[in-house]
Length: 178
Ligand SMILES: [Fe+2]
Image 1 (tube, helix red, strand yellow):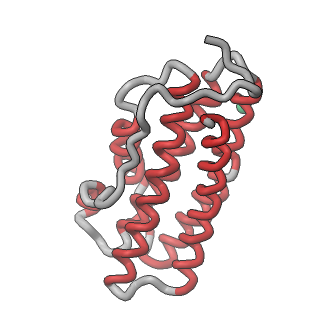
Image 2 (spheres, rainbow, N blue to C red):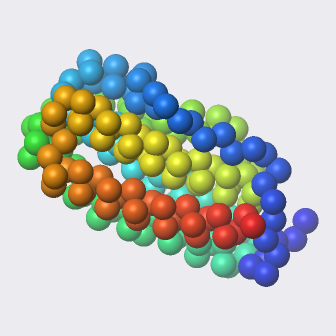
């Protein structure tokens, strides 16, 4: 089957959006430390970078798809940097421990990439899945922080800004699917 920008496709696989409790297992990696919800969101952003970039490298048949996956991760380095620095200022550097962040990223990525995405449809589905995971994780992190009276206005704005940016990426990926 040929793909090009003027030929959208329908997904052959159902994209399963994880909803509630996406952080439940992940925060255990951090002994449920205060603000570890944010560490898990940081790991999810790094997982998204890795997944979109892998798709950017391997997608074939359409240069437009190559650019689309590139667009999906181009803002991530700045987001990751900003998010990590916010975590350090709020909770200290233990919460961005490299090995633990990478371990959490691996858990997220291996859950979403259980099967290697071969076709363009599967690659878009995978990119959509990590983007939706980020939205779910960010929303859940806000709820948890709110319940602990730790959600400052600045933190809320930062997370909402992040969600806004990722809704845009979802829009772009969804246009490819229609
Ligand atoms: Fe590139």
